[in-house]
Image 1 (cartoon, rainbow, N blue to C red):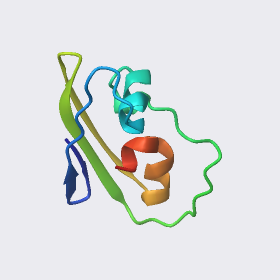
Image 2 (cartoon, rainbow, N blue to C red; image 1 turned 135 degrees about the horizontal axis):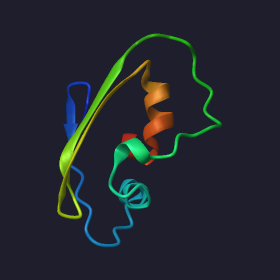
Image 3 (cartoon, rainbow, N blue to C red; image 1 turned 60 degrees about the horizontal axis):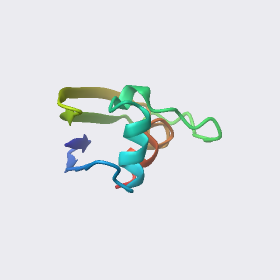
Length: 85
């Protein structure tokens, strides 16, 4: 489950799932902290914090991720397709 702010979403990735979020997680070994940040993102310096939490299982091992981003643009740049479903 991925929670952004107070909204929760469940992402289910089966083997070789075509979902962009699943492909991105596959490349990161199931670790959201290892997702590559977009270097071409242009974000304002606005401080409007967005908290992201992810809790689940990847490849049989538990995954827990928590991070607070300065704003939604920063979150989208760091989380890529994981922030878009």
